[in-house]
Length: 467
Image (cartoon, rainbow, N blue to C red):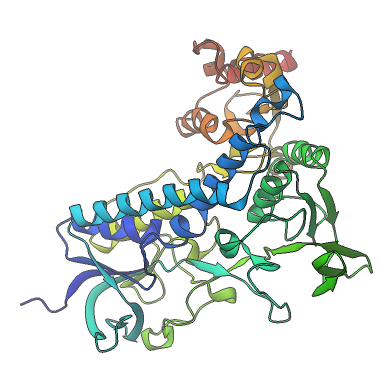
């Protein structure tokens, strides 16, 4: 008889947990997942990545944003867009993704247990079921913690889910505001700020930092800030928040925000996006010999092992980069290492996709990083308006940048702003991974007319600068 109930037990059914369990099952191991939510998929499918990107796509379509440069700023597919219009599409996609995920787990023989898991000891887990009397205890040879994160909430702010809310509450909003204050200009805050602004909502974005997205090329960020201001977004950077208070005015309920500089911001609703914390508070980690870092995150080594070797952690719960794509790969690699299977990944060349409007995607080094590291580089640029496809789709504001070594001409980084950026970046990612040079783009024939032609145009631009 087996010494443990399971070979691998996973806490959380998000991208990291799914891939870890499925990889273990494919290796012939007994794998199970504990998920305390009523549905599987974690934050990614239910409140995070999938809903936000679906809402963005619904906004882009219904507002007529993509066609405005052709038919005029007043063009829209639907005059009065409601929250119900947006949620209709989001609900459909969420249900489909949940069904696909459940089918994948079933097909691979992974047991999904609806329960909240916590540690009894390093190899034993208590499973608190939603139905009274169904609690149980299971043992596992190896364990993967993939519980993800939850929104960080300031105890001094009176959240109510409608007037003052977090990104996890978006799908519960009853109506769209006319004015919105967004506190926090990280990826989530920026995405929702631009989504609401595209709907005509007057948005004020507040952040303590002097610069948006410090890990993204500054030229790309400056271009995004320009487009945001052009869409009537007010940027309050280098500003801290002193207080957030719901107030009742003659024209209805509002939110009053006092900044540390003394400025006051008034809006119908306020979105709080000041980071996320690891959802580890209820895991009783001390019983497993573990202690979380700041904001509930877990520390791991290169093999995603915690300081207790048979307990792994993967996904957002280990912090940066907190992307669904990297979480999937982390879960897979954790399961492979747990059972002695060699699994290599191209580290350092994973892309970022930031679904603002317009969207941003980058891979490799930015100009600031290359300057900091003392690497001699040159830049090639291509504007979407130079490309026939850019004119066809109505995106005349897009920009693609290639950073490459002045002497070896080796590609060092790609940064893109504009329609399809998160798809287009993978061409540059492949060349980076293979150690290719700028000449690859010059010598390659791209379909015409496509946005991929930007790579050739940017390559020629960069080579001309060398001369």
